[in-house]
Length: 255
Image (cartoon, rainbow, N blue to C red; front, side, top):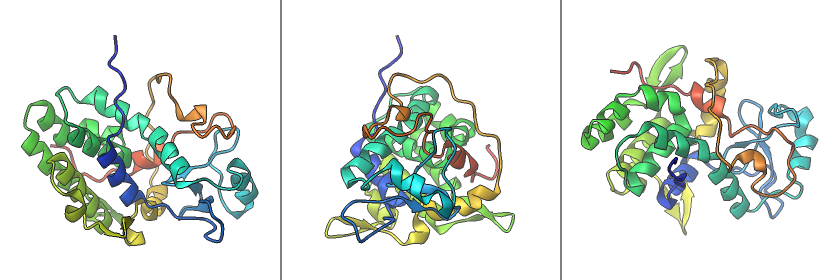
């Protein structure tokens, strides 16, 4: 009998939220509204891509009415968190599938954040996973820092936002203060990060790359397509930019 799906721990969720950011498409309203991300995809909440009834991402200003109609009146922060938790389910499954050793909540949360940002393919081929499954948790923790690169003018270079995220994930994995390690500060309890530190700002680069999207195995009973907000969203809505995350490969070469 397969193990029950393990949910994203709260601290891991807070880490993901702090680096994803939650722009509001219309600050004049009470709720959070859809917005266009840097590559022209309509998005809402913490990086949740909006799709039409055929499962295609809504793109460009011409699709504005469709995006607004999908979330009439916008959503609350609590609803945005519900969407994010649903979008994290694939990464939770991937970590459970790939890791063969026991994990603390902190370790699990750090790995889910890593897989959510970079794709399960990156975790699967990583030295991080090899060391972890071999029982070398300390060595695995140091491998988070290897995955901080993106392509700039065709050349892999460390990106400040990725570096901060990897440092935060490493610290969480080790049970340390991930906010301090990742340069995340709070103002009256709200996480504050420069826009450049949010992964949404890196989608423009990801859009220029085109590796094939990984095939997904059959999923369990809880899926994002079941409309976690009960808003009667279009059928066939894809998971949160799985292809986008798969494009964010950053490790120069697995050892």
